[in-house]
Image (cartoon, one colour):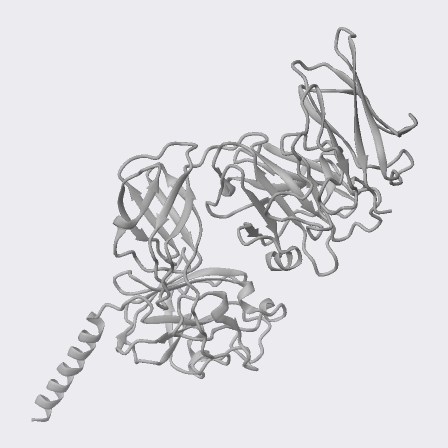
Length: 570
């Protein structure tokens, strides 16, 4: 009788284990709850990496054959261990299992993936290979410059908000450096009322559109509501694992190269139930970038203490360029290209007429210069060195060929500015030569001395007259407010080979400033006068004569005379 009872009990236990194991978990039923990637220096925790997972569902889960991956290595749980609702489990290597069992329930992972100290994409998998939860963390998630250097774990604040990233994670406050097997030291309720927004879109190939969102999203229930202009037929739409932040749209046909399409996406839900409104984004196929397709448009190389450098690029071509195919660099003392830095580790579009800001401190740059919301930034882990006095900025394409290069100098700033710290240099015209000092000017005071991510405050103004020479304005006020701070003497010739001398005279015919002397002209370009005299001081308010004298290859001399007013605050 005892044998029969024991047999029945054993069968019931096996049936229970089988029933629990046979269930298929839903996305976010079990979540990655704590990450200990850098155990050195120890503050009381074992000197080994671990991951803690938590069951946030109402079901029991037999974790046998569940997987844990860092994208390149996948380990598995080989034992029958049941994770009860609202309970946690420590995942670690077999060599550290005894050390972690002191803290709570722990299980060894076969081939435990190595955790990168600087950040990683970590994935929890069901036995069938289904993604249950994934996080793509980096050092900024610590929110603490000291703790991010080692010895402290990353903890999730609110397991009820598994889609949230940086805003739902922070460094542990536990004195041991982590809280495995216990309630997270930073546990708190996190409110999520933010709707998912589209960041950008690009085409992976001629018939696949990728739309990147600000957070993980759920699959659309009605793909017929996706509208594309010019018209393209949608065959299917889904979300891309492991993070589900990207919508993948498959087309029935191929999109045209160098065409920019507008996509309208219906309301999209995140895992907290926030539903966005209809959103529109542009997309298109990538083209190979060539010289001067992408140009350096602004550089901020002398930030105040605690600030960050930035470089702004501008797409002056009619192509859709992948930032993931471009590199940023400078030169060393031997003039060799060095400090080569990929601009993006993933496909990222820069469409015709768009700007992108590259920096190591997006939050600081945004808070300092207050660019418009649409300004696009890419925060890089590092930038090439940009010295305060002079330096180089180089952009290379996917074949490591020069796309643009700037050898800047601090003296290019407006001469009356004595303190250059905190002021960017802006390009006047994207079409004029990059290396022409006249094509660069200090950003205006009214813009906050920098315009990251949008049109430069000192950009090329419209011409006010026609002919071989024309003036950009009839009145300049060199007060750094971004409105007519300088005069451009534009020229347009039918043939190259003209040589020009341009000068400014006062009302009594006295020379005030030689703007250009025997300068060889192309077919088009400009000379710039910032309202300063030969002595480098501001010319008094009044009317001035601009005399342009030029001769062609046959020695034929012509002159143009025009007037411009100066209104000085002094």
